[in-house]
Length: 235
Image (cartoon, rainbow, N blue to C red; front, side):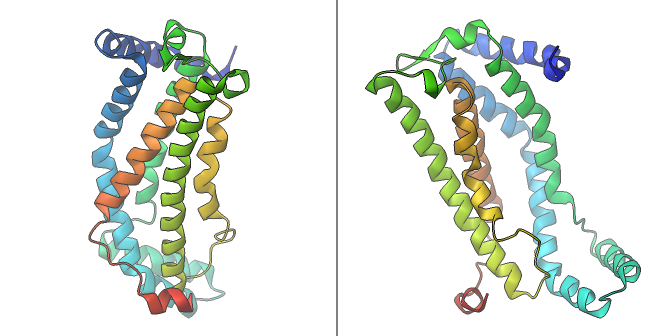
């Protein structure tokens, strides 16, 4: 028995909702619409996380100063940081909440689209939703997978550029470097690699949820100032 079998009640509910939508829409469109509805329900958490991220950005110079002041004194540093965040009513972990909440949803969708069911027998432009790219044959099927991966790569490129800008801005504030930070922007393309391992239906979910995340972050941070060119060059 799979560990993910504990999710089967939620998987059954997701299946019923997508099936109901598929009565009036193509199944591929029903998957996209269901994903959008769930992400819309999670939007309040994303707004709270954005406020937390803006607060951390605003406090970054003070955090850097506390790191310098209490270098080699981890206990005092923890107390000083806790006091700073308490005074500013901010949390260093607020940005993690939407990601953590999405994990169960992602697990349900992964289970739904990797377990044989009637939804996977439907098609997108003639390609079965349960088909893996390794089993695709013919130019038409490969074109559908290629378009999906291209869309994921485009979203990954947008996230890559944003991660690079944020990394440069953090370095310009004097914040302590995070181990492995130079490699983190490249993780934006990991979704493309993962999509190659799952059926077409799961790929549709991935491109929908990642595109939503990218657009949502851009909207929520639209008023945040961009790093100055001089700061980027120095970083």
